[in-house]
Image (cartoon, rainbow, N blue to C red; front, top):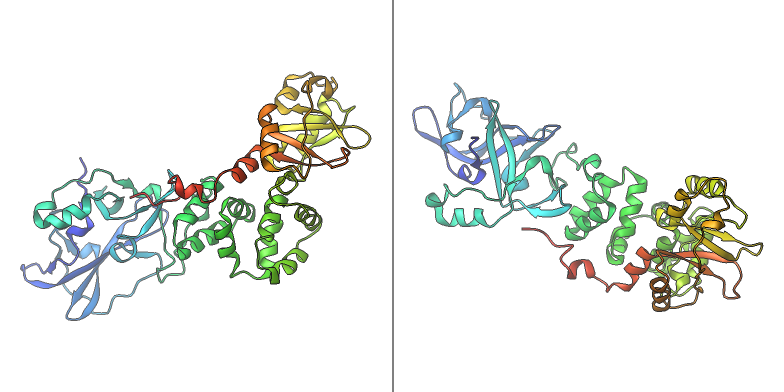
Length: 418
C-alpha cells in the first residue's frame, strides 16, 4: 500500500546534513506543473542564514521518515528563484481554493498529500476536510492521523494567477469538460481575481465564454464587463442569445449602453433593439427571436432539414411551428413526433391537437400558466393584433425568471465545499 505523506509534516522543520547537524529549516516544497496527472516534486526551499536556497530532490533523503537530510557534496548557495512551471506547495496551494473538476466546485486545500510512485515523489492529492487542522492542533501526536477525504490531484485545477510565472494558467481544455452553468457557479464562488482567471481561460473559446456569461448572475456579468472596452463588450454580447444580450445591455450603465448597442453587428443589433422595446417581466422581454418556423404545407422531411440547418438555440428547436400566409402559427410539432413520422407526410399531420400561444405583453405568470396548462417547453409569442409570430419563450428562461434572485447561493450551489 502506498504511503501518503502530509506536506505539513515537513514545513518549518529542521533540514539536516548527513552527520545529523541542522543546517537550515524547510520553507516549502517545490513541484512542477505540466501534463503529469500528479506533479513531480523537484526539490525544497530551505532557509539558511537568512537566505532561501533551492535543494533539488535528488540531493534530499528522508522523505518517508519526515526528517529531510542533505545527501549531496556541496550546497548551492544561490538564492532560490522560481522557474517557469514551478509551484510552491505551501505558498501557492495550501489553504487556497482549487477547482474540483469532477463536481464543478471550489474546494480549499487544507492539506497537500505526497507519495512515492514508481520511484518518484509526486503530489497525489489535497485534503479539503477539517482533519488537517486537528492534526496541526495535536502536534506530533496528530501526525499519524490519516486523511479521510483526499481529492486526487488529477481531478483538480489550482488557481495560479498569483504565481509569478507567465506559463502557469488554467488549461482551457480542462474547464471545457464542465457545463457552462458549472463554470459560472465556479466564477460566482471565487474571488474576483480567481473569477477573472476562469473567464480568461474560457475566453480561448468565444462561444463557451458567451455561454458562461449567459449563466452568470447579473451582478457578476456587470463586474466582469467593467474592465472591458465597449468594443470588447459588444463582441461578447454578439455571441450571446439575443434575449440574454438584451437583458444585459439593459443593466449596463446608461452612459455606455448606447455605445455598446451600436457596436453590435447586424442582425444581432436589430434583434436586441426589438427585445429592448418590451418590459423585461413580459413574454416579449423574455422571448428569443430565434426559432424554427415553416409554411403549413411543409413535409416532415422539410421540417427535419430545417432543424438541422437552424442556428437557433436547442431549447427553441424542440418545436417546429407551422405558419399561414400571415405568418400566424396554426400548428406546432415536436421534434420527437417529427422523428416518429414518415418522411413524406405533411408535418401538420403530426401536430398537437390544440395550438397555444401567448402575447408579447403578457406577464410571466400568465405565460407560466399557459405553458403548464398545455404541457409546453416552448411557446410561440404572437403579435398583439393576433397576427405574425414574433418569438418563443422557452421553459428554461421562464424558470430562471421565476426563481428568486440569488437562488444559487441560497440553495448552496455557489458555495465553497470544505
